[in-house]
Image (cartoon, rainbow, N blue to C red; front, side, top):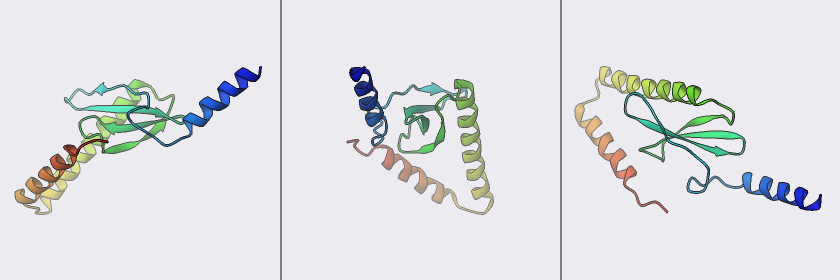
Length: 114
């Protein structure tokens, strides 16, 4: 009995630690538009990240969220992201601004990972 309780407490301690994407269990889910997301399991949640830009946190969902619900949330996120870009264009932001933002995003994506 002591071993079971000890193992449970050890598991609980490691689950409540700091999030580390290199050790957290995860899967990659491809979306219909060619994008993909990664839900990481951590402390009874699924932390959702953009797969190609793993520094882009998209939100957290309950651990028991289905794959279909994750896909729906991710697609809504990307639709909103694309809509916001369109609205910024309508406000008059120049193509040069969007090019600068794209270069900034690519530079962040290429940072060495530790």
